[in-house]
Image 1 (tube, rainbow, N blue to C red):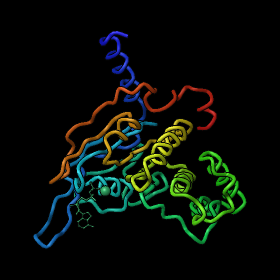
Image 2: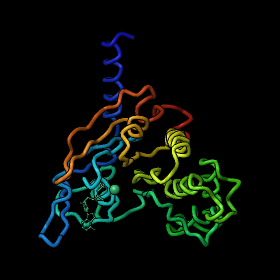
Image 3: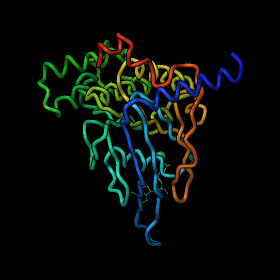
Length: 261
Ligand code: ADP
Ligand code: MG
C-alpha cells in the first residue's frame, strides 16, 4: 500500500470509530486536593470522548493525575468542576455501568475463584444459581473455568488478574477502567496478559480506558492514546494509533458479535 493509501485507510478507520455511540464524555473535569500549602489543581480541565468498543490508553509522567482521572470516571472522587457522562447520562458516584481493575488484584482470599466473580452479580441482585452460572461463563472467557473451585492464593499473579478482569466484566459494564493492571507482573506474563485482554475485548461490547506508564504497551493495545502532562494534569494530545487490527475490535455488524449484544 502506498503511504497516501495507508493514510486514507487509517483516516477511514478512525472516522468509523468516531461515528459510533459516545460511551464516555468527560468535559472540563477539574480535580483539586487540599494540601498543606493550600489547594492544588491535579486535573486542570480534562476533555475526552471515547466511543463504543474503543480501546483508549492514557499515558503521562508519574503524578500527572492518571489514577485520579480514572478514579473520577469511576465515581470514586468528588470533582470540583466539569461533568462525566456515560452513554449520554450524567453520572455522579459509582455505578454498574463502570467497572475497575487495579494493579493489586483485590480478590477476596476467603472466596473461591467462582464466588469472587459471582460476588458482584449477587450484589446486583442476581440469584445464587444464576450468578454462579454467569460467573462460570466469564471464567471460561478468561480461560480459568478449571480453577473455579480454588482459592486466589493458589493462583499465579497473571491468573489472579484474569479473575479480576472476569469479575469486572461479569456486571457487564459499558466501560472497563484499568489502572496499570499489569505493571506488577513480570515481562513474560505481562505480554501474555496483553494478548488475553485484546482477545477478550474483541469478543464483548465494552469500552476500555487503560492507564499505563509504558508507551510500548499503549501502542500495542490502544486505538487512541491520551497523553497527559503534569502540574496541572492536562491533555497534551489525543493520538490515533495506526494499528493493523480493526479499530474498536470487530465490526458491530459482525453476526457473531451481534449475538452477544
Ligand atoms: P498518576 O497516577 O499519574 O501517577 P495520581 O493521579 O496518582 O497520578 O496523582 C496525581 C497527583 O495528585 C499527585 O501529585 C498526587 O500526590 C496527588 N494526589 C492523588 N491522590 C491524592 C489525595 N487523596 N490527596 C492529596 N493528593 C493526592
Ligand atoms: Mg497512578
